[in-house]
Image (cartoon, rainbow, N blue to C red; front, side):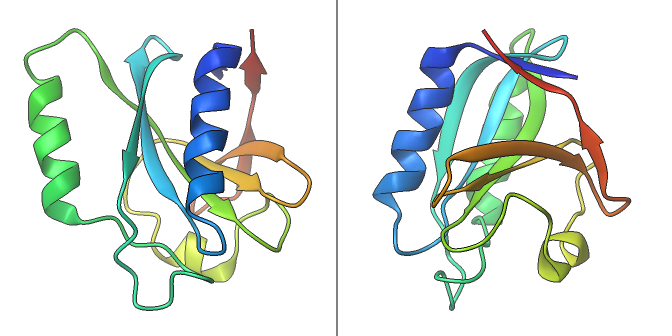
Length: 127
């Protein structure tokens, strides 16, 4: 289960809108399933309109910073500019982290969270 304050969800959506027509990617940071911080990342994929790839150095730097806090990586988010908020084949293939993957369908603003590569939906609450 993930919980995110409405203001942080709006920050996530604003970031993803700024990346259109390409996909955006970022991290949700928090504690005990509650998001307390949104960390937008750069999409370095050669085909950003249909795929995402975060800079590994950028991700590692953020994760090292978390070692000095009482927070953790809760989820990885990214957008689907023209498709549903369901995992694509490439989403499942690149699911290396054992945290939920949040997908935002930009055309409908639908936001859903998934455990990948199993494709199990994770409860997501906005408050």
